[in-house]
Length: 267
Image (tube, rainbow, N blue to C red; front, top):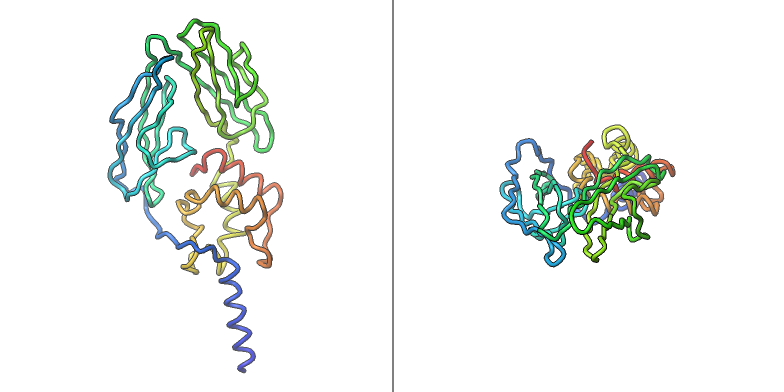
């Protein structure tokens, strides 16, 4: 009887140890009841001599806040610098993962260029997306470059992979404007990613809420807040952990990466 008890305790400890990542579980929050809000408190028009900027103010929810101008990269600072003229949707995210957005348009100064980017979706894992870039202002002799590549007179880019993409337009006087856009793969949290997480990570004893020493992956905000880490760990196959008896296919790993690169949306 003592031997059986010792074996049972040892097995239970092994489950806890194999899933521990030294993080603490966040409580489940109903973000539909949150009063989190975001306002634009100031902005500076860009031209060739002045960098554009947008300043925002957050309220409600649970501080501290993070802010994003592209829906993917978040920062604690309330001011976005080096912003090109154009329309933007800015997101605030609080400590519970609850979000709110505000839209604003930054006009171009008298000598500036307004750059507009219209993306088309790419299939996950295939460079089938596109970006149409149009510019007004400056001297009209434009050169467009994608992700640091060579310039071209056409503003159309094809064969683009999903994720965050940056376009720079430069006119004949050397005035340049940079803007970033998300090319989405359309990977869905509900139909593509959640089933993978539920069957391989949010399982008994590991990330399903019954072990309070680790994050609960059945709560979407917990997954979203740690999306980059999940992409890294599934990509290097350290999650699910060795010895758990669980494994991800190459296709599942690619889907997770595409969803994270799309901005880890609740779609």
